[in-house]
Length: 245
Image (cartoon, rainbow, N blue to C red; front, side, top):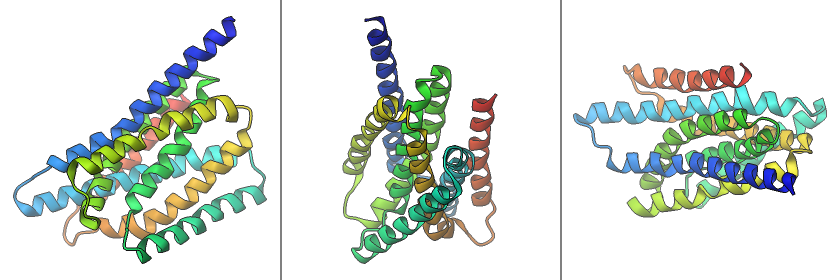
């Protein structure tokens, strides 16, 4: 009975943490919906800097979380298959979205980062509640600029506006508790499966960074966007140091 109570308490904490981390996505989108900066050149530079920050955070997630965790429990063949499979699958998805006139690379990258990290949070929480709480905070910080960029992308590429996009991202935040519970109950004893999912996501995210996100960042004679990428990656480094320390 005591074990059941402990499991229920752990599950409740995971659901709350992953939901909180996921709700950072609509928070970022809401910030993008009201962001108005003048003069116009400064607004453009800020927007590109936020895109770069999100790209840096995604790169940090790949380099410091997804790849190290993914390679820890798989043989070389599994590593190659999962990582390459993710990149190829996301290329096919990107081509399908482009053919149907629905570019959503930022959104796909954000969810590809969020879902496996929420699974890892659930699996981590069964071993260390402190590590799970810290990971939830890192995910939330990553999701704010990624939600900002996804909102901008969807506004420019679709007919959806304002509250519809924010509401859709709020609903997508529910994927966090689902993934966290899955990691807690089913994947804490299946590290190879978690590793495969992480490597698959890492390959896909890396494809999206170089195919869609990085080309949007550059502005001639502007230096803030590259610094935004550095800041995003630094955020990931700080999170990795805090987790390992």
